[in-house]
Length: 227
Image 1: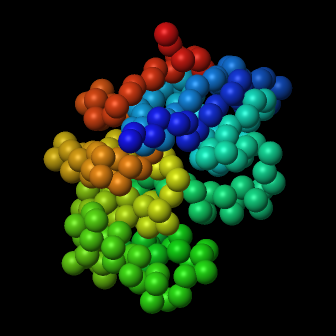
Image 2: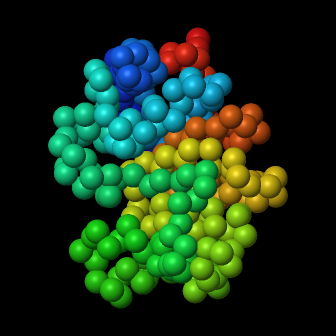
């Protein structure tokens, strides 16, 4: 039976940034839910607050007011140490520019999040191989980022994101630096992870084609959701 319960609950969240003496509101009284197993795309013009909202849900940034509950945990009440531990076990990150470490191989990049766990070296190796196999890059595990195409680097980044079996996957413009073919491959991979593995995916994008792969599209405009 399909589980329609909410995995993320955002309640009355507001966020501003300070530029000197100026206070710049970014998000204003945002309230919405994300269902378990959802593939959500958040769209909006530059400066609308898309990435800020994603960072708040992922526990990278902190709210000014309101609450964000992920899988029953109110992450807005956690200390920095608790939040870092929570992120390590619950959030898989996919970024526009991959954020791979150049001096590490694909295998070592994917293994990084597992170094924060209690898994043995053998268990880590098996998890990494499984994740790279999932993105069809097991034969490239010993290659460095400079030896991989942009699309391959993003697939390594996706393997790194899913290797911990995270509660949510957050993707910030995951196809923004890719050619159309590589972008299609990456979007197809995200679709399969959502459909076959039941992963909840929250994607920020300015690309209507990418957003069209999601189940649900929400539009942010000047820090509030459009109707």
